[in-house]
Each structure stands twice: as structure tokens, then as C-alpha cells.
Image (cartoon, rainbow, N blue to C red; front, side, top):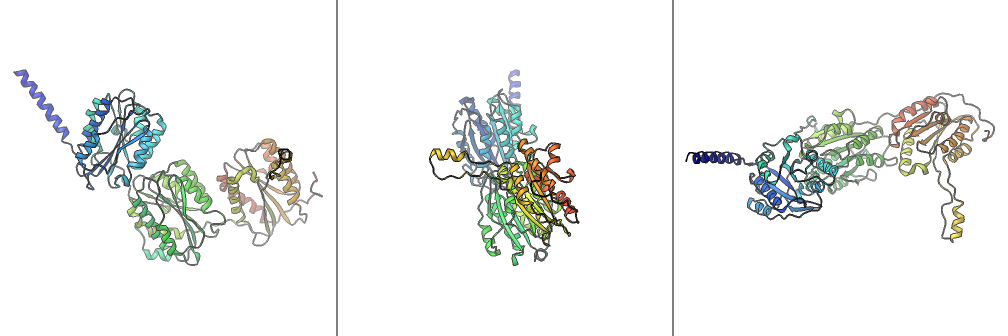
Length: 634
């Protein structure tokens, strides 16, 4: 009897302990939970059912319901593909939810495509149309018994989900799991978001702890980022400051999947309110707008007639898209196309106002494009919204100093609190002073590059760079003349319909000009003036990937140019040249005539140094060597 009494006491204590553990309930905490359940063929049907029982046990500890502070649950299963079981807004009562969980069928997928499943959860289930709520805690619970087919894809998908503000738990079952992959999926700190159990029976041992960590009151809180901008200025002051201030302003608006459509509308309303402050009289301010996600789309171009009333209506109609946060390409496009020569006005401030609620898809590339934009003389304001942004990235995107060009608000609803301050700061931007060469000297400056070799993209960058240099040369006094020699295309390619024999004969006569032929044409056709009044200057752009033999042949023609008295500046892009080629392709002293840029995008980094030397040469009377008799003296 004593043994029986002891046994009953032990059982009673166990029952009390279990009762105490099961008393945990997550009540009144708005929570959106999505379960991502492994349904691959490596799982037996009986174990798949144990997985469903585990989900049932976890959700039973939440107050599932239709209210704003209730919990919502969604479930997807995955194998070689993803199967949506139900969205967050489909079963908002506990009885309906538990019945739906019980009815989920094991699919027996052929592979374990975990990354694809996480992407599906982020792009489809944590969306307003699927019942996800912005004010709720967002939790994704991934359960798997194996390694994914593409671990790197899985890690990237999890990273994007975390950036979107989803707290991820990773539960590994059995011996075939990869702890490294579980850690790559889970949120930080890893010890709070990674679970590993021996088998599906053991899932029962973690249900209470998982439920507790998933409840927003107990879970690791999402970081709260406070607005770092000062109180908004007086609206009248902003309007006064913007009166009569000309500027070309481009808004770059985030339209990625992490933004709810209602918040995108708040973003548009903010832009409308800022635009209302700008002065459009006499074409003082012009506005361009681009939206971006996976790709980018120009919604309102910078050029054309702009009337404030019509512009405000167009902004209101800009559509919402979705996708990843491809910030880098959006910045590049606005720099190269939005502010292209002939589109923007050279004598006004060029301003970009970029809004984002998250981290860019390729942070290093975004930083690179932002740096090029700053070098191009464009002032960039960066506005971060919400808790998922990276403040360091905002600082890298924005112009310096950060305290003038970086804004930060907790939500889209707070954007209007900075509209007057932003407009005031944007209106106070003034174009950077340009170097200008003045003097009594005359010069003929020819920019030379092989457009056929460079291709369209690189040619556009060289032309943009040349245009910036030209704007700083003194051509108002008629002392300076500018030219471009770039066409070096194949000759005789076109042929109307003909017989094969005629075509064969024609193709044998097609010429393929070399870089040397371009320089020879420059020497023999361009610098033929012998009056001695104008300093002849050639700025030659050389691609470092050109064939060395072609460059050596071109160097022979450059030597003839220099002998004729032409001041030759060599701008080498990409691979550096040998010392011998440097000496041949640039005038003496070489240090003053030889420039390098790692890429065509980085050309603007050498502009000031080139201008310093050009101004020094062109601003004073220079003793020029006499032209030799005849153009072919060598």
C-alpha cells in the first residue's frame, strides 16, 4: 500500500507540474504566426501527424480570434514545391483552426526546398491581403528533418525574411539535420530561436517554451528605433525658404513587398505634401519620381511641363508594386538617366530624396552607387522608416553631413512630421561651385575615345564625364574650342539582298578600324592648324583591356601627335598600363598627363585633378613649340 501511495504522490506531483506548465497562455498580444512544415518523403506519415499534433499544442496556448489583439495562424507545407494550407485570415476561431490543422495531408515531396518555402512565406503569407497585420508581432516557425537542397538560397531567403521584420524559429528533428543551416535560418540570439530534438515524439518537450518565446510579451523584442530628426520647422518658414529657389528633385520611393499597400499610400501623400511646399513658379522646381522593388519604374520624368496641380494628381495615382529591395539599381538609374545631360539643368541644385523601410538587397553595391552619385554632384537625402532599416546604410546612402541628410521615423504615419524640415533642407541645397578656367590663352580641346570598343553604356559615361569637364572650361570668351572624336565603326557592313557570291565578295572588303586608326585620323584631320595661337589639347580615353599590340601601334601615332606640339592627356580605365606605354601615350611630365580610373563609373573621381592641370596649362600664356612642316613629318 505504501508503494501505491508513493506512486500516487509522484503521479500527483507530475500532474501538478504539467498543469503549471500548461497554464501559460498568450493573451491580448496581437500575433501573426506562420508555420512552415516539412512534408518531404523522408518523413513517415505517422511522424507527419505528430508534427501536426505539436502545432495544435502550440497554437492552443494563444487566444486565436478575429480581434485586433488576437492571434492569427497560417500554415504552409513544403517539399519539392510549396503548398499553401491556409492563410492568416482564413481560420480566425480556435475550433475552425484546429479542425483545419487536423485535415492537413502529407504530400511526400521529392526534395527539401526550404529556401523556396521561406520566400513563399515572406512574399505571400505576411502580406495584408493574406491577413497579416502591421501592428502584430510576425513569427515564422520552420520545422524540418533534413538539409535543404540549396543551403545558400535558404540562408538568403531567411535573411530577407528577418530584414522584413519576421522573427524566425528553426526546429530541427532527427539526426540528418544541419545545425549550421538551422542557425542561418533563425533570428538572433540563436540560442533562443534554434531548437533540436531527437525525433517527432520529442517535439512535445519544447511546445511550451516555443509558445512562450513566440508570445510578443516574452519573446526577444524587435528593436525600437526612435526618430532622430528634430521637431518639424514652422510651415511658413519652409514656404518662405523655398520661394524662388530653383532645383531638380528626384524622389526614389520604396515599393517592395515589406511595405503594405496602405503604407505606400501614406508615402505618396508625404511626397505630395512636400511637393506642395516647393516653388513651381517660373520653372523654379522640377520633380521626378521613381519607384523601386525588384526593378525600377519612372513614374514622373524630370522633364516636360510641370504644373503643381496636375503633378499632385499624378503622384496620387502612382501604383504599388512588390518585390525585393533593389536600392542600388534605382540610385544608379536616377544618376545616369534621371539626371542625364540634356534632361537636368546644369546650373541648379540636383537633389535625390530616397525613402526605404528596410535594408537593400545588395548593400555593398548600394554603397558604391551612392558614392558615385555624390561624386556626380547630386545631393542625397535618405529617409528610413520603421524598425527594419540599417542606420549605417542610410548614412552611406546620404550626403554628408549625416545630421543634415539622414531622417528616421518609426512608421509611415510619422512621415508628415518631417515634411517641412525636409523641404527646407532640400531648398537650401546649392550647386557645388564649379572650377572654371579663365585666362588669355586659347585652346582647342579634343576628347578622343573608341565608341565601338567601349559600347553604349561606357560611351555614355565618358560623354557625361567630358561634359562635366567642358562646363568648367572658359568658352564664354571664345578662347576655347571643344571637339569629340569617337566614331570608329566598321565600314561597309550594310548590304542589300544579293546572291551568295556577291555577299562573299562584299564581306572580304569590310574594314575593321583599330584604335591606331582613330588616333591617326585625329592627327591628320584635326590638329592641322599652323597659326600657333591655340594650344592643341587631346584627352584620349584608353580602355585597359585593349590588346597590347593595338595599344603599341596607337602609341606610335600619339608620339607623332606630341611631336606636332599637341598636349596629350591619357585617361586609362581598368587595367593599368606598362611604364613604357605610359611614356608613349602621355605628354611629359607623365605624372601631369596620365590619369587612371578603376571603372567608367568612377571617372568623376579624377575630374578635379584633371581640371587643376588643364586650368594651369590654359590660364597662362604658354610658349608652344612650332608646328613641323607637313602633317607627316615623322
